[in-house]
Image (cartoon, rainbow, N blue to C red):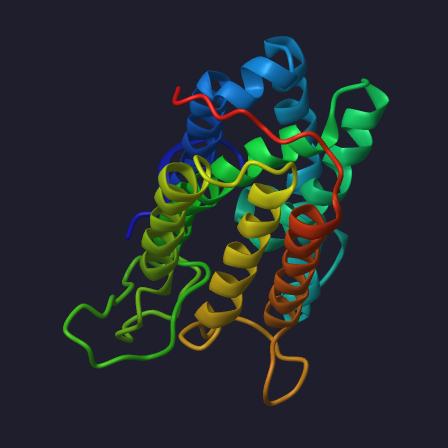
Length: 262
C-alpha cells in the first residue's frame, strides 16, 4: 500500500488516510443535507456548522485516544502533536463528537434528538469510508494470517509490520460499517419513528463492530490479556446505545416522527 500521494513541504504530505476521511465527511454532508430529518429540524447553515466544529473536536478526540492506546510511540511533545505522521482513533473521534454535538445543538437552540438521529444514520458511512484510509496507511492492521486474502505491507512508510501476511482488518471494518449504514438507512429509518432510536441503534452497531474487530486486530496495547482500551470503550458505547434505545422506545414522551421517503 502507498500511504502518501505526494509530498507538500517538509514533514507534510497529501496522504490517502486524510483523503479518505475527507471523502467520508463529504458523503456524510451530502447525504445528510438531503435527508428529511435535516430539512425539518436544522437549517443548512447550522448543519454545516455542526459538521465543521464536530470535525475539529473529532480530530482532537481521535488523537487523544490514539495516544492513550499507543503510549510506546510517544517519545516527546513532538510525537503528541505530529498529526501529519498519522495516528487518529476513529472510535475516539466518535466519542468526542457524541459528547460535543448535543452541547453545541443546545447552544444554538436546535432540537438535539432529531439531529443525533440524523448523525446516527450516516456516521457508519463516514467511518466506513475512513477505514479505507487506515488500509492505505497501514494503521489499524490485523493479526498475522495465512488466509488467501491476507495483506502484506512492503512500503516502509506504512505503519504496519512489513513482510508479514496480515488480516485486512481495515477492509473487514470498512465493509461491515458501510453495510450497517445501508441497514440503518433503508431498513430501520422508515420504521423507527421515536426520537433517539436511530442514534441509540447506531451506537449499538458501532460499539459492537469495534469490540468484535479487536479479535483480528493486532496494533493496540491491552488493558490486560483479555481486553483492549478500544474494546472496553466499544462495549461502553453498546451499553449507552441500549439505554438510549430503551428510554426512547418505552419512556420518552417526545412527538413521533412522520417519515418522509426522501
